[in-house]
Image 1 (cartoon, rainbow over the protein chains, first blue to last red):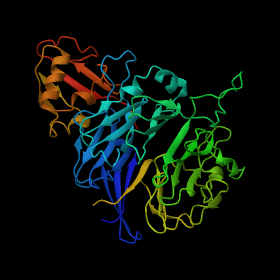
Image 2 (image 1 turned 60 degrees about the vertical axis):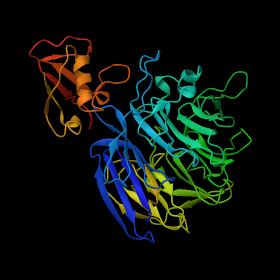
Image 3 (image 1 turned 45 degrees about the vertical axis):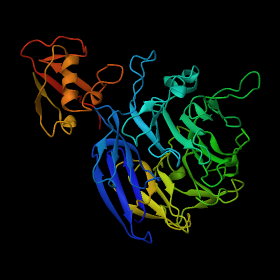
Length: 376
Length: 86
């Protein structure tokens, strides 16, 4: 079946369907009208199961599951939730992030929540259990920070990454808190933040680096070169080549007047040296809008050594939207198609790796997430 | 007792705006509602047994957050989506 885009918004879910050459699109929806939907993801293993992280404003958080391409949905029997009676009295406010598990573990999914928690399902999203190795780690309360360290609608655990070579090797990121790594399927976790700036905190008096407390906005691992990680942070764009544990701030090569702050980073599915970002204004009052009201994407094709502006077809002025951290994705086409949704409810595409852009749909609610999939 | 269901929860009650439930306490009634309509309780009460922030429970005309509160005979339970959101 041709490509589909799963558009999660502040007021529901829409599915955009392409024809075979990705030129003509139709929009199906809404589903869950009125519900805040943070992420909708197609399971790449069966190319059939869809999960949706949803929170109706008044009601508690949940996950919905569809096995017919989004036509019908059924709620999780046990949505992600912290342990009843735990000392910190945490309760999930919303499910923010969904990641399918390793190819060798069908049915396994991970979820990241606000407040920051990690949850795992082993039955395709029907029942969820806390990952105690993270949620109850003795340092976790330090990693996640205080109420002053959270995004406005609550701190986020996001960018859950499963190494395609090893189902026990996991990464996750938190805003704020930093990036963490587990090599034992989530039983133990170590910070992975060396080299990442924390401009919002004073330098440590002993000259050492902070090991956690950073603010990654989005972190991705290249599927064909899993030692290559990219990170868009509150304080810059970074690349990490494992086994090194020191991030390199490749965003320094961005134009100074644009800077290297944004929410999203996406990769070329076949070329680990190519990535795209969508910078935002991080000056003054941190409006987090397109710099100067002139949105642009920037691409690197040399692993971050240089970046080129791409804005053909994008508004030339008075466009003050933002692209959120889950709201940009690529397909696997040749050339690669790029898709992003805006806070003003527009869905844009570049069918040619950023050389040109066109708006597919307008007037949707504030878009939280755009993911791509090709259902079976 | 009669339970008045807000629009936000009627996907659980097959669209019904009123349902019946039994129980001596608010916790008992909510347990009965969840038995009849699986998933209902978690959307109203969080995992730490707190009424969710934007939900208000009225037993009769009294707001009630204590799940151990006894239900007076003849009272209705009205579940309200608070005037919040946007």
